Image (cartoon, rainbow, N blue to C red):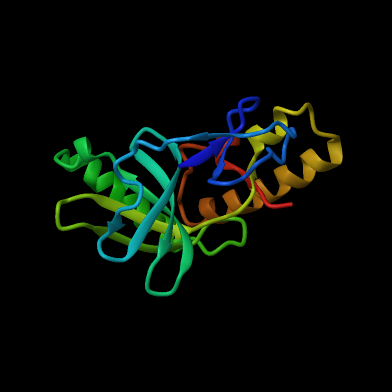
Length: 177
């Protein structure tokens, strides 16, 4: 079970009575994703879904051995037989592992379950997306410049290593303050 804001469609852990963004009372919904509650590779318990992208879905989970909250990107099962997709997913893991910037999530693990499901376990960042922030109106110049400066600094480190981010968008920029 999870809760969702009927006003902004933002999802929260079960039991969040009010949306912190707009104050609307949240609704409890039944989660039907078969990944929820499973333990990936005997190490990462899937707690809730954060979103979906072209290659797969991203979940919040717990690294069971140490109780650390993580973000887990799982490649779509139907892509598991596509060798090119598998190679791309592996390259993504190698690229993220090389980046060590304070504004870029850390990669903790990359693996393949016995049944062939590929996953990345990464640092989970609590915050809201730039998309969520922009939904409440335009940013003042100083705030926009501060956010853009941090994004450019992080991209600069990636570019210095020959890495090009191919999915840069407001949904993928998380703000923690």
